[in-house]
Image (cartoon, rainbow, N blue to C red; front, top):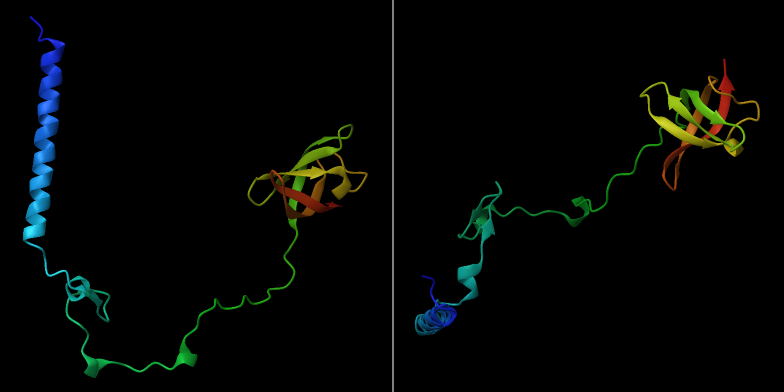
Length: 148
């Protein structure tokens, strides 16, 4: 035979009341036995090896650092010159719609191209060199030149 709903409600309410009393008891214990609460107890130090300790560093071992020796920025990139154009083959081209795809011969990636970035005589199967430019949906082939 199942217990009545009101019995379950009473049990749930009794458990909630016990939790409230337990929480109040813990709160009173914390107030009665406070920790030192000082900032010194909460400070941690990092030694020269990166280990966290509670002892402060030895002032005798302290090393002076010149402000000019600190580098804050990233080093400048060296100019490597003009990048080599990519080589590939026209995989697909639709002359009516004016777009196609070039397959890169180095890594077999396919890149979209528009007829405005290619010579008018381009056709499927042509070997080409091209540069890449970021478009709305990914990298696009631009500056396309037909090679033999």
